[in-house]
Length: 122
Image (cartoon, rainbow, N blue to C red; front, top):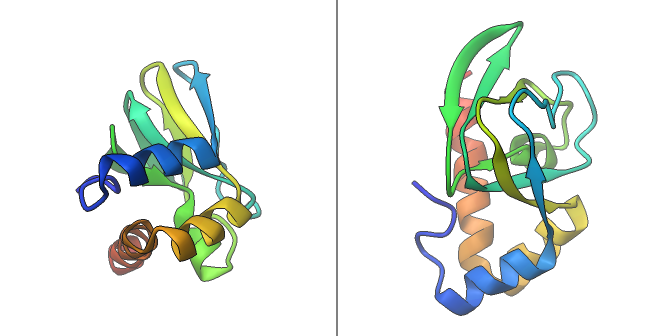
């Protein structure tokens, strides 16, 4: 389920504007296991591998958010993300996620739901 599914076009535009759109190359690792929760990304295009202890535990694609679990739960990262393809992402700071969660409640609910689903899959 995409974090954008329950959002209106205006709300999607607000999420995109609150962050910084970036291209990331295939092979890049924007998030590393056991590091601080200083950013999250919404994937606009491409696919990533989610790895714990070097073993792939999931893949994520367009519309998915990555890095939110540690921000929401105030913990260290539990997985490493590796780009399988070239990515186009929206980089969001913890402050942007907090602000968006207040101003776009459906986004906040989607982020919390994604984090909760991943905790349940541990």
